[in-house]
Length: 164
Length: 290
Image (tube, rainbow over all chains, first blue to last red):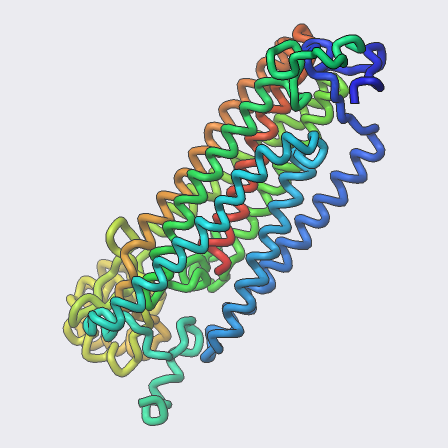
């Protein structure tokens, strides 16, 4: 890296901080293009997430299948991770730093893989055990299967016979 | 510079940054790394509690209002505005940092100001949302009668829907004051609240049972604690960010960074501001989308 260093062409940080010789500044046109592109990507991803959020809302007016909901929510999580990637790598310029530095940030973050799996599994197993051994908990908290969204609730008084 | 790249350079003993980044910036990154674990722990504990319960309120029934839209059912609308405000303020922050690279003082001032405005809009939106949730008058089935409840610590008004055939007996046992409030809140009568208090109970019950009023059971109490705890902690970060940005703006105007010869401080606050946006992406996911 440092054999290309030319102090006369260097702008700010290196002049004040001689230990920093790795300036990653792009020219204005490339920069503008990159920011525009990233903003567009973030907007599209957010709109896609909202569309899926509304799909979940629409599904709750009926009786949604558990698998379909889980699938949609999984896709929303992946879109969120994509947004996080663009914010960190472009807006925060982590993608432009040298690899070893990126690793000091990314490797500790891998702990989240264990963190999420372990604690969600813990909650899930707690629920299963409570439902098994605490009948009052199960009966008082299990949803009875009618829609959770209000708009169609008033129709259910007519369908009582079929439901019970 | 050139002769430092020799075989006997002591890379880790000072004089050279192994990562080629200024010290303060590295430390800002490591602070943000630790902060991501703080937020991560909060959000994952929310996940543990959610996975441990049979019922959790759907976000679209909790967050369905919009300022000045009255009782219109607009799920997710307001929070998408908040999300876009934060994304746009992140973009203006990127532009401020870039202006700082070019030592363009006017540019830095302009974009810092826009970022501050974005942050303030976001905070105002959050203040409105909190106020709304804490003061809304939701009909909730408590025991055998209906009460008007807002969300608060330890109480969540968004449980399961009570079926219409179960609402009728509950209405009969509800106090006249609550009935009057409900009729008033649902806009079922042109009479004022005081006049409704004088109206016979039967008439109020009649009005309510013909309406489309949705009565719910109390929901899981943990919802409020997590919601206010996590969005509050995030809002605290945004407030700190806005204060820091204001300080940066004043210092830029005073020419502090021009005299220093670099705008690295703007880069560091930029990292913090993007992190706040990043956390919101996950808060948005955990509370409003799934």
